[in-house]
Length: 146
Length: 111
Image (cartoon, rainbow over all chains, first blue to last red; front, side, top):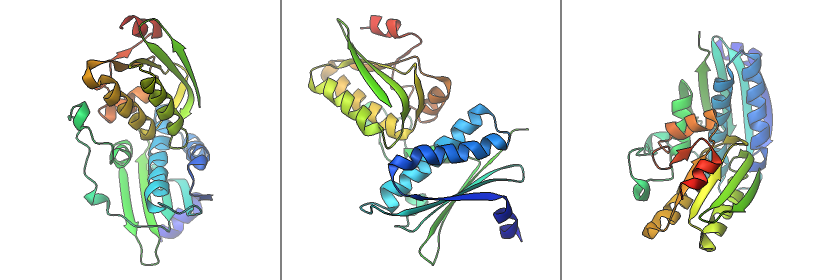
């Protein structure tokens, strides 16, 4: 039931998983967030979280793959925005990605894991599910501030 | 994204316009590396006309800061950081790694 409800409210676009499409990916979620009444600050952060998610897919799930597919769906569902990114590349376990140590000094500051960290900080929910059919489904939600 | 480099007596100013993401961050990284390779380690990154920066841009700045601060030969400072970008830098814990200035000339004057 919930699945069907989601489909009615979501707009979907398929992208080739390349960095050059990040602009369009951000525009797409930005327009939905704008229509959904999010503030300029929230729209920026929703775009940033989606960019980080898509960048990770392009860089890691499709490492060495030049024509990967990235299915992006986005819509206003209930009191917030739902963004779903589906890829068909390598799965990963987000729980093994270490949180960046934000207190580490310059020489010890690690570069990896920052994208996932930002996604978690900027969105209210981030859920990653590798499926048996070989797809990986990343769902993010952010509620509108009352 | 567009990058311009301006030389001052005691530092170089790198001005970034537009959007820095995984597609354009390599150009920023390249500009910063070129400065370092040319012996320029005192750098002002002017963000006044920057609309957007993802963590790919943060990484380029981090690499340049590491390289510039080595042997105490210089540092990267940031100028005119737009509010949204500053908030994201703060979330990532990057504001502690860079001195920031409200005005590019104040930043230049720091060196």
